[in-house]
Length: 276
Ligand SMILES: [Zn+2]
Image (cartoon, rainbow, N blue to C red; front, side, top):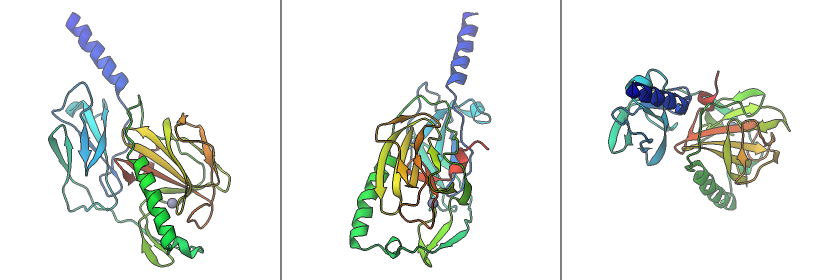
């Protein structure tokens, strides 16, 4: 009888600790959910993919709960090749997985500020410094208590450019679109999509006024081109707290919010985290 009540308590504490998972999509720019079979420790196993620490969450969601107590949530880079086997390591064990190909659309934009297409030497030096700062923020690793990694949308407005577009600025090929653009209009409100801590605030060459929030376990979100910033580094935010306002700072063709979501220092499709 005592054993039964012990198991019952254990099950209860497990379901209480379970975290809502994002939507899986094993494509470049997507997310792989890998059940860590054979690793049933009470604490989260540490997992790594392409040299970056990977989010590992407890789960009671089917089908994962039948296979393992822990699931790795892996961000797959847009540059990943579908033909190559991917490998994640957790507690010394290897977990191979396959990704499917995905063909993203092309987008051609005309930018009037020529330096935003062909930056000069000073611009490039500035961009290099800023990139180091942003990557450090994307690599944040914290372990807050979380119950969900599902997001509210940070702004209202039309989705003007989806994630993953192959981009050409003034007919020159550039990096693919690593976020989702929301055209909410100049001055539109931007709010935190989930609880988190502000880890970067800057006025960047391409991204304009920018904020990066750490949500824990390698999950970060970035807000760009803002007209106003309402937060500072170290601020602890709850879902819905104001971050600032939509603007057109940096490399833009009009006012919008560029929203990036990053897992294991890899930018992925933000909509995979938004409950549809
Ligand atoms: Zn964008």
